[in-house]
Image 1 (cartoon, protein in one colour):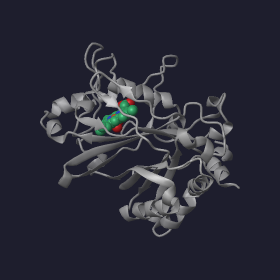
Image 2 (cartoon, rainbow, N blue to C red):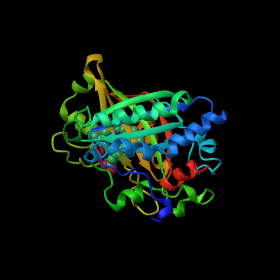
Image 3 (cartoon, rainbow, N blue to C red):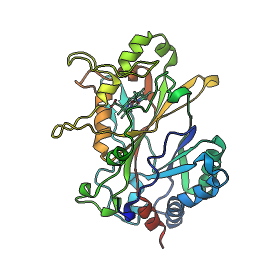
Length: 323
Ligand code: HEM
């Protein structure tokens, strides 16, 4: 990877704590607002470093994504990444992946909740009145990296060099786009709320068929025959027709919730080199593959947000900050 396209730390490992902060810019046509946003976005790593220094062992990391609506103003008119657009609603016969507002995403991760909290506080202080908070979700690591449905989540993620291959825009992808987007990633976020009572009423074997893995020891189940309802795992396996290779994405899903208010959820966040791969996954889940056979995980999980961002390389973040 050439130095100018050094990525943000999109490959940071799952942490004990995370905050997913989605904000909208109030008035992007206002010069002061645009300058504030540029300043905060471009200096996010300096802000994070100041907080991280208090306990380097906690590995505080923050990545920042920019949405289609504000791309031009925030990047000072750099051409938009070719696939970047607002989240496109996916409407199936039974379930819908809704599209919700969001211009900036801050994905904050650390082994300590207090460091995540402090960084979010400082970022929002800096942004001041320029933004409206659309969603703030505080995620935590549950036993063995399980989601609140009880399954180990993240196993099929790419590792090592495969991660960069799956996640970072390469020079070969940018025909018609600016080379400045090399080393960046498309990011999709969706907040899901689970219907825990009805999920718990299912037998473990039924839950395992829905996910496509065993619950206790996380073993992959064989794909169902073509005429049988596919599992979540199978619906999300996207195979390249030409090469037969799988198109992986990187997921950093985190559980969140509050038993007191009976809120149980999974925050889905997927990083990808090609936005169409995640869009295809969403189509398979919500419309079904074949159409009509949607992902049964959705009978127990409702998407309440949906937004798309582009996470630029470190060099592009620097460029945004230059006067
Ligand atoms: C696999 C949970 C939403 C894409 C899995 C697995 C679990 C899981 C338990 C199996 C273990 C693993 O490989 O991680 C969930 C939950 C969700 C959710 C609880 C929200 C309610 C999504 C969405 C997408 C997605 C929205 C994509 C748009 C994938 C992919 C895999 C996977 C690509 C790996 C498939 C493979 O084995 O190749 N998910 N998921 N998931 N999920 Fe999800």
